[in-house]
Image (tube, rainbow, N blue to C red; front, side, top):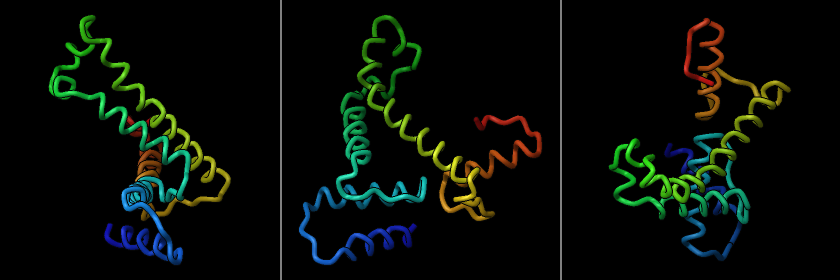
Amino acid sequence: MEERIMDEYRYRFGEKSIETCARTFFDLLTGSVINKVLINERFEKDDPDFDRLKTNLSKGLENTGFLDIFCPVEILQSKWLKWRQGPIFEPFDWILELTKRNIRKRVEQIESGQHILHDEPDDFLDAYLLRKQKEEREGVETTFT
C-alpha cells in the first residue's frame, strides 16, 4: 500500500512545478490510490468520471441520516419511510454503472489478450476475476456473478 501511495505521489509531483488547490490535489491523489488498488488505473486532472464520482458520493452520504444507518431495512422500506430511499441510493446508481463498465472493460481486455491474469493479481478486480475463474473451473457453486 505504501508503495502505491508513493508511486502516486511521485507521479503527481513529477509533473514539474504545478500550482494547485490542496483540497483538489489531495482528493485526486487519494482517489487515484484507491482506484489503483481497485482496478489499477489512476484518475487524471479534470477527469469527468472522477468529478462525477466525487459528486455522487457526496450526495449519497449527505442524504444519509442517523435513522438510515441504524434502522432495520424492513422499516426503511415500509410505506412510511420508503420515500427516503430514492435520494439516498440514487447517487450510487451511477457509481454502480461505472463499476460495471470497468469490469466489462477488463473482461474485454482479457478476452482480447491485452490484459493477462497472473497468479499474483495486480488489483482487486484481477483477484475477483481469478477467483471467479477458479471456482467455475472447479465446478464450485459460487456467489460470484
